[in-house]
Length: 374
Image (cartoon, rainbow, N blue to C red; front, side, top):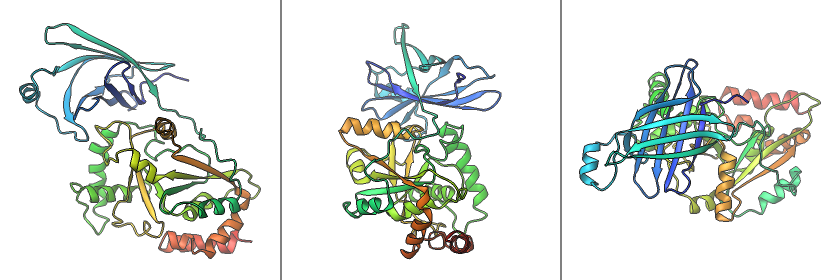
């Protein structure tokens, strides 16, 4: 595997109170990205931009440091910070070295203290996994549609949310499935441009300074095919099943589809929920954005998760082990049962016509009945 600077890298600086995140995009002839350093219990983030003048897989440069607040990219005045916190070290520059290795991204940081002595720190950050198949093992006790229905029928009300996927790919947002990883670029370049272009096609003018409308705008992008750091979920296990079995494969296809089940109530009680993807440590947060310009959200009983994490399954597993819990489960059902399951879901009122109001959904629902339900 080729070693490259491009990717998402994060991890704790061993033996310290610091956590480092690096996100770098491959721009073809160069690399561009950002690094953020977080200190435990501190409201501040130390950030720096990473730009290479050429396609080099080793970066070494003196970089300018910016101090910002958690979840807010507005720069703070170093002079004012020094006045308010005179005992702290507010360095303006640092020597930064980045070098990819087979173990991860080797990061070297050198900063001069108040006496002019250089403080050096070395850390190797773990790369996000790029495996196409999921590492999550399916629940072996639930392998048929009947057992799945029996299992979800016994669950506590509103405890869990669900997601259906037609293939056994790992849990990952549409943004993180692309080669891009720098979410600051996404926020500062993509969103303003999309808002300008799409406003000509929406009845509602989204106010991106309002958190609720900002989330609704992202949700609109997600449901119309633009990559976002959102992951679609539903409160209904049967809606999730429809999305798992919706896609038609070859007539002689074998294999399985996957339905994820996530302990939403347990997660929200154990971990803070955030609505930002910049200047925040890795997180996975559940949102229920307004359904502005999105008639599909209500019939799909939809909600979204926003995350900064590429290797989401690994992150949720790590968090679960820290709490002694299992938040995420998967159930693999045979694709060969597709016709029977879609017929039963239609009797429940779950069809493309109900989930996707409009001509496209109606035609898809009729296609299932007239051509596939034989």
